[in-house]
Length: 130
Image 1 (cartoon, rainbow, N blue to C red):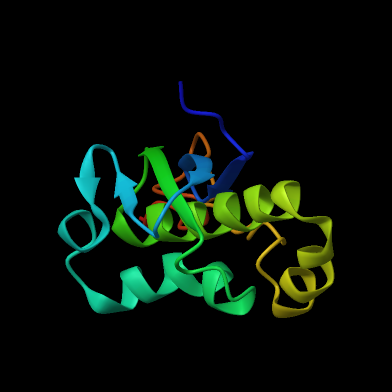
Image 2 (image 1 turned 180 degrees about the vertical axis):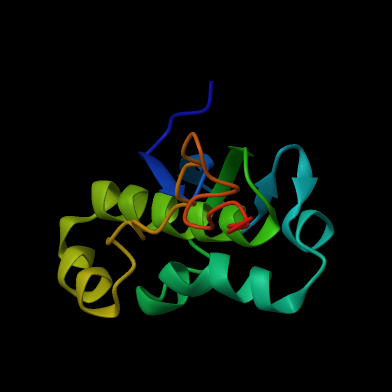
C-alpha cells in the first residue's frame, strides 16, 4: 500500500488542487496524465515545479495532483500552492524557503461578482438623458 508523506490543498481564482506526495523518483501526475501532457505550455509546467526546485526535491518524491475548476493558469497556480503546502508537511525545514519565495501565500484575486442593476461588476448600463 502507498503511504502519503504529505497532503496539501491549494487554491487560486476558482481552481482547487489537492496534492499527494509519496516516496518515488520524481514522477508528477495531474488528473491521471503526465505533467507536460496536462499543461502543454512550458510556463505552467515551470510554475508547478517551482516549490520542488526551491527545496531541491525534484527527484525525491512522486506527486499525484487532482485539480478542478477555473482555467489553465489558475489551475497551475493552485497546484503550486498545494505542492508548497504538502512539502512543508513532509519536512518543516522547507517552510522558511517556501515562505520567502511566496509559494505559501494564496493569491486572493478573484473575479468580482456582477451586481444587479448594472451591466457587469462595475460597468453601469448606458445613460440616456432623453
